[in-house]
Amino acid sequence: MAGRASRIVVVSNRVAVPDPARRAQAGGLAVAVNAALKERGGIWFGWSGTITPTPSDHPVVTTQKRMTYAVIDLKEDDYQEYYNGFANRVLWPILHYRVDLAEFAQADLSGYIRVNRNFADHLAKIIGPDDVLWIHDYHMMPLAQYLRERGHRNRIGFFLHIPMPPPDLIQALPKHGEIVGALAYYDLVGFQTEQDKENFARYLDTRGGQSSADGRSYDVGGRRVKLGAFPVAIETAAFARRARHASRSQFVKRFKESLSGRKLIVGVDRLDYSKGIPNRLEAYERFLRNAEDWHDKVAYVQITPKSRTEVPEYAEMDRFVSRKAGQINGLYSDVSWTPLRYVNRTYSRSALAGIYRAAGVAMVTPLRDGMNLVAKEFVAAQDPEDPGVLLLSQFAGAAHELSAGALIVNPHDLDGMAEALRRALEMPLPERSDRYRRMMSVLEANDIDRWAKRFLAELTDDRALPAMSLPP
Ligand code: F6P
View 1 (cartoon, helix red, strand yellow):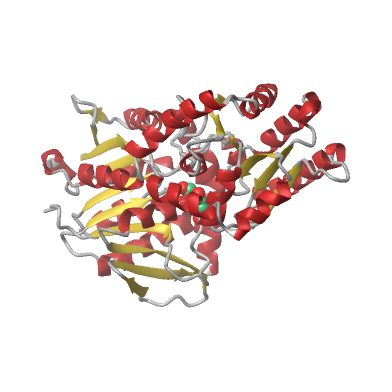
View 2: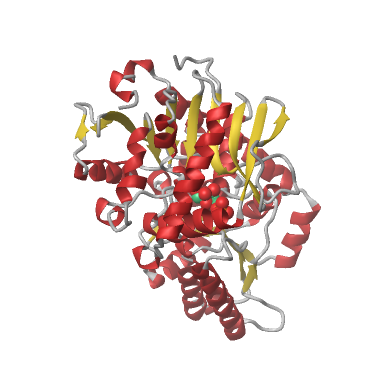
């Protein structure tokens, strides 16, 4: 069945429909899927980003080049329960190891299941028997089960863009078997790192799963599921080109003038508690306290678009970070120097590429992150003749690939981060170049195209197609 010519149907909550007026364009997932599909084409199905009291029975379809985008609207209660509620107040914190922040409500779980069943109903009308389905992220965990229940025997893969914690934490999720356990209905489940994959394998052990002799698949509940680590990547060469061009733009020229020769530190993160922004600001404050010789010689630009503002934990974080940013500037600014520019705006990818290239240091210090594509894009954007330094949290998936070149930091160790920041700012060119080259060789070997090809090759690999992967 699933040969090379099979049509690919991607499913994700956000769909990057090429329409600037749409709200559904955010996030690393959208960028990765778009890049992976734009050459081979296919269908991309998901939420339109629109909420309406009366969603249509048919998706809105847009076709551009080889891509067909099919999107559906959600009702207000669907949006509240499925997206704000279960996905972002329960799954997101638990999978980011923050069980303390999870707010479980039975109504939200019901909404999540209802919306996933609704996605399955729509998909059932779109897919043919030979289509290969690639489902993305925590919004859609039980989708394969609901499709199997409707009789679909297609090859179905799932990729989790965010971390998978150890079994103890997964088990903190009420009814985890119905949601995380439902991943066993996929033929292939992909994770960002080996550690995430191992955590899930151990969870399957707790559910009576039996590992195959080579450890690549599990038999559980009468099904066989393959597991793999597929670290998500970027369009390395294209992003490097974009940064080169952007550095000649008026926008970047004006931005650089505003720095007046000061060394630029950059941070770019959605406003999310997983990103460790308070710790980073605290570490910067300690750096300023200890490194008077750097006063007036450095500018830290923290670009932080607001995100999921209707979720209370995000609103709380927003207030905290704004207060902290104000305190730092109140303490250390003088009339001609602002040590921190805290910016709640979204910039185009080209503008960001230019900003990365202008920076001497990037601070990518999440408390927990599936991968973190800012880290990879920052590296790709550097001028090979004068590259900047990446400060990277040991808890970002990207650290598993970039540890030979980045300065790896523990985001809970504020003094350690402050010291690493000084080391990065003062690092001599030969060391910077060496570190940059090591990271670039990783990013060149595993770019977004290879990531998508590896996943799809594994998903459609007939040798690993056991009879048991059919519905029980
Ligand atoms: O994988 C995490 C993710 O879904 C990415 O697409 C992106 O980083 C972010 O979350 C987007 O969040 P939202 O769709 O809630 O704006």
